[in-house]
Image (cartoon, rainbow, N blue to C red):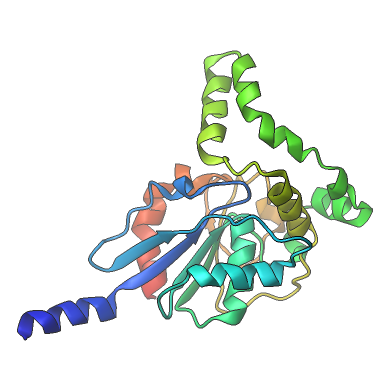
Length: 229
């Protein structure tokens, strides 16, 4: 009976953390995130192919089908950060965390707002993302080859339906106000969502858009404190 009580206590105190990767990225971007297993269970989510004319709101509700435990921690990177914010509108959660992302359309850089205003996202060459294997055959130099290898490893979601949908949803996101309990972690050297446009965040000096990988030691040290605070 005592052993059963201990096991039940462990189950009741376990915190489930759901991790949503960025646009076109697969769950392997979280491979270096290691939290104490006696306290946390990590669930890396994968992108689904959107339905025809699917809204971001409806997509978020479909993604909630993957959430199996109550009061989860939702953590999203980049466009995945936008998605978990939409998911949080329909679920009770313990913590809502975004990384290398934005809290509202006001935090999008000027070039993205320009593309949105002119509808240029409809002309975006997303087909280039499908040709990364071809690019690998022509990569010259060790540095470029290494970058291509990383793209192949982490950015493997190349379905054109998904890519076109995701790009449009990112640029045309209508949110103007974020949740007050949202925790935003952002790198000061992020070239995709420049730090100067970001308000009210935990800054990571030198952090780039890929800092969930490159700054994994910081996340492994500080995420438990952020979640438990």
